[in-house]
Length: 184
Image (cartoon, rainbow, N blue to C red; front, top):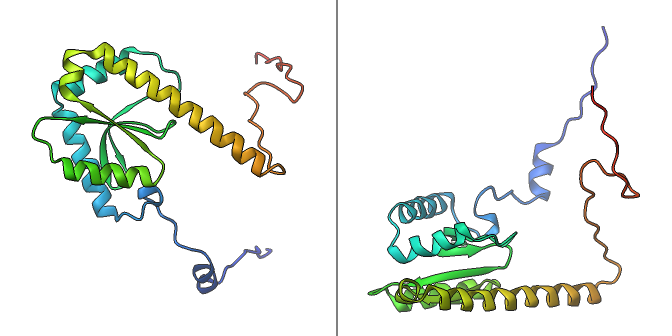
């Protein structure tokens, strides 16, 4: 019988050189307990939504916006936003009657500090004039898309040696001819 060779790492050296992985919080430095509480609070908010939230969510569900989808009561960092479009870095905040404006402004400022644009919408506007709200949202989304494209162009111009190629779709080879699939 032969003995197997195995690779053994020194556990002290491995932990000293590499930082600990952040399993939760996605780099926001949030404790697991706080993040779990935020997610539970977001679940409760989704269960007990206001009429304005329900109306806007119904419009988003019926619309085909491609890759720009909005998630209701999303946890972003240490805040819960009413609607979040991750691909655009855009958060929608619905202003309800009797809401603490100072807390909302502080949350908006912290989100904008990390590159997330916050669009505030009054709940009464959603319920009374949904078409105007959707027009404003469309304009904001187009501006945000243009900002993102300009930032990508600037990054590409500043880093000419850096390349990125999109992965090929399944079933296609390098010269873009689809591979025939065998039926076995």
